[in-house]
Image 1 (spheres, rainbow, N blue to C red):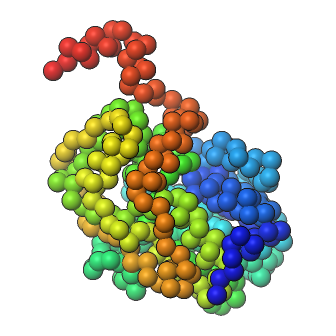
Image 2: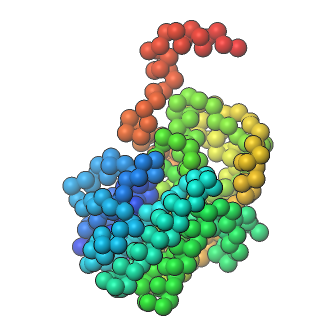
Length: 355
């Protein structure tokens, strides 16, 4: 049985790799509010999503260490005395991995090995939770996809995540470092980077809507995905950490309610009360990479960990839009179309005459 998270982390120590990124920062805030002593590790590589503002609500209650997951001496020091290690650092861009595979190999694979060796040598009693990706499965053989499905990744990014997962599983099985292996689906919500579209499709669509731009829906928009709000994801992470039956196991973290891309963008435009959408043809490259329908079977997570998402898509998108309305200047600088046009009469006139 899992412990109640409301008391399980009080006075405990926790290290979060990639802790100033999207999910890592939301996790750090939740753990700090639960009374944990949180240390955040982040190398702040440009465009990877690290943002100091992400930790603003708990900036006086977390310890921040600016270092790289591949730094052996730093990891050897930082893992000491930690009750929990949440491993979220990584190269997370599928497109980058297609043109340059080495950051994935160096960060996701070598970095994971450095972390696990540090735990083996200096803190083998820590509990480790790793967040991988649903992309480790590749194209789905049957739907919904459960943890027994074959893994046939379509890119180096997904291969590197699967390799990192297997490395951690070896340290669990051979060296006794209790670990939980999570495969996250499409996560969205506050504190995600919003400067580019290379990862985080749902949040990127939110930005387009909030900039009053058109969201492109490829094909007929019928492709299915499951989208999970970040707060639900954080609960999955922390609940799995305090569930002994979860140690050594692989779990999907997603939603059991699949949503088409057309439904997603319509909901975003409706919630944001801005933006629009249009159909677009697949490029040859995008079509080759598209894995087709995918949504997670979370039965195992529900039965063993006692977790399932509680936030509806509409609720999650409302919270996401509200957060970025208040804090958009910390995430991207483009003003809403109405404000931009108001400040630029020439642009307003040109737009008014465009057909």
